[in-house]
Image 1 (cartoon, one colour):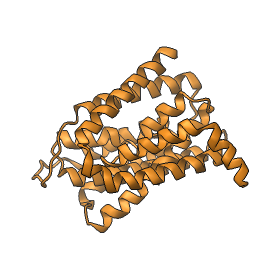
Image 2 (cartoon, helix red, strand yellow):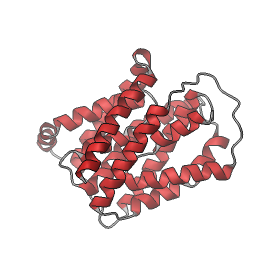
Image 3 (cartoon, one colour):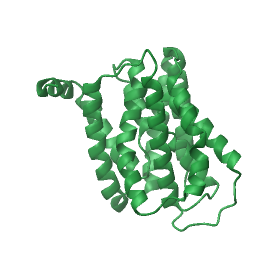
Image 4 (cartoon, helix red, strand yellow):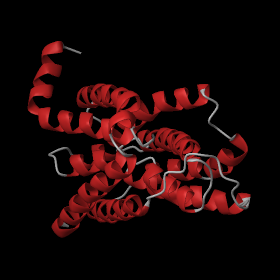
Length: 257
């Protein structure tokens, strides 16, 4: 891999790189990977649509991977509650990633998914700071929630955190910190599963040079977001602003289908 090649790609895609860097800062500050916004940016770029899902998932993995390590070191995971959420999501995310979908269906599904994500983020107003004694949910119900989100996430190319976190907040599942930790882990395993599913598809393709540059940008942005954004910005404000952006892009995508 030549430095000159990477430099040329960076110059040609500097706007996309800058947007990915900014998105990683914003999303990592509230425990998300940014997959929905990565998709939104890529959908409006010149990148071929078969590469959009894989690129977004790869960036998701880079951003939330570091967060999961930090949360695990701080013992933020209650595995008895986390495991039921991912039991079905992992295989269904793999299936969603493997499925071959045409371009029109992809953009319709993408637009609707982004719109749903925007609504979910806009309505997620709670910032619980202490652990709550939540009502016990059946393992089957949690598994179904995770499975449905995992399937859609794999098909579209996101980790599913933007759907899972609001659901957990609304059900008083646990403290905000543990929900953020759980959402990060959910995003990580689903993104990995979805990416592997896509890579096994005969039609899988990826611009590794561009993916490397984007991964480097979101890694830097994610590290900054985790360490700094909580000190200066309200998570609710960030969610609202991001929800508006995603809703705008989703409408633009759907209007062009």
